[in-house]
Picture 1 (cartoon, one colour):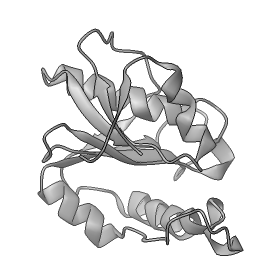
Picture 2: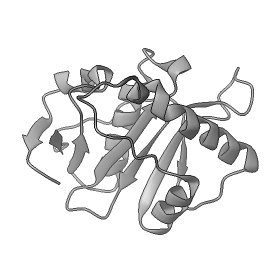
Picture 3: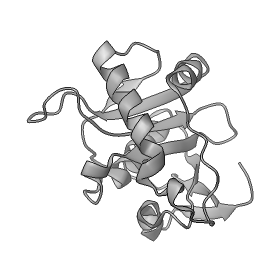
Picture 4: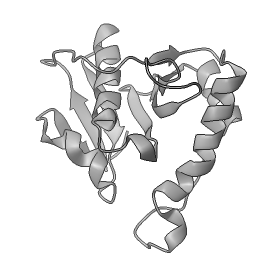
Length: 165
């Protein structure tokens, strides 16, 4: 399900510290950590257990990451540097595709170890903060009904269902 996010009255929120990338300039440790999590990503949502209501899995790759960053996307990474965490650690990530009518918030992912900690919401709000920082007041997002944790942001009264983005 696609949603338009009305940020016209949105007040930016505090979120966890994150790293923001608009160029493909990752350390070898970060790339290795991202690849490990990409490998774990598919199984972490049960795509391999025969659940019929989920879409077939299409993984993005490090090559896709590079392409996106060369084509007006931004990648947000949480982990790799937060106090108290050994390196390399990936807690979660998300993208904004700035090429659409409304900036598209997509590919939000929280690693299994850090789920149920509010990190998924932080990944939504940090991107809303970025949209507002750029002087825009509307974004779009896809939230799938099967992904119950991702729907927790819906309690905010800024989401309106739309047909497509």
